Length: 141
Picture: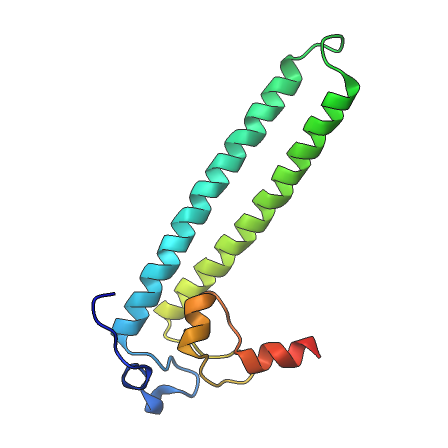
């Protein structure tokens, strides 16, 4: 980022109760960040789907006599691991999509538990989060 605004100038205190505490410029920054993360996640999903298809095709083309049972078990475990990683990545994409919706309806950066603003630092680290550090710490207790 070429220029850095202070957090204070990016927060509009009059817009905290239920609406985003951030101005349009900051929201555009987070939109770009989230879109970048979503694009990377979608690419990962495509790669995993291709690996699963390739693995499935290989297992169907192998005859029962040319393939050792241990190898078949290893391949099955690898496919299962890919399915789990794929499901996790798709869930992550869903979180990113919901964050984009919150930007669109101007509720991005508001904790769904406390109703207070989520710190910009937290959103930089976890741009899809819906809860503040305080709410997260209370959940862990």
